[in-house]
Length: 113
Length: 115
Image (cartoon, rainbow over all chains, first blue to last red; front, side, top):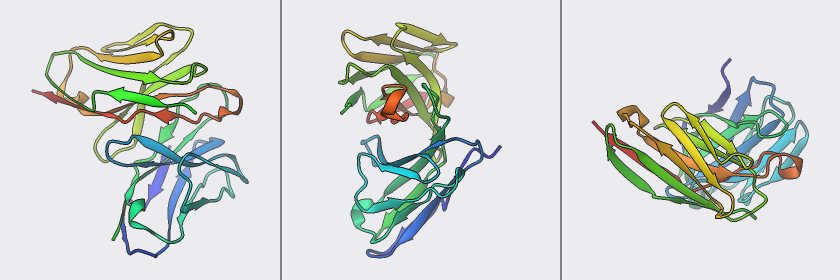
């Protein structure tokens, strides 16, 4: 199994550009999450989904959008990139129920200049 | 909402020494506390977790302790090795119900083990 796969690994954007960060998992996990990680700040939850067609905001959703049309895929969209969105983005997934562990992808390092 | 504080932010030890990382949480309803290890350029991996009905859990060189009264939990790594060098994150959540597995993470600790 590939687990959680994120693409691209690195990207440089200009201010105002848009892009989609891709995340796919092959573990049939219902729950999926997007985090951003800034130096010294830990991981902050952007959006999460508990199943296809269901998404909800996390702690820091402004400037982002998500969709969940299938169980496998959970893309994160930046519509108007801003320097404050320079960060490392991690996607994670887990099984529904109890205290199942989250499985993380390797991240996308995004710089906005 | 939940708030998790993690200390220290950096920790440097000699190979063979022990390392201890501490976290405090604010929500007394939190009942599940995982620890993740993040190696350079990789996503985080669960290394150990503890539930609120347990005071201590051990897995080979790694142990976690939980003090519910004081609302703090700690990661202990004994006989450290250079491959233990990584960023470690603690997290807390209310497992089950409408929490949907959402974790609140600490700020992370950069552990460096010198050979």
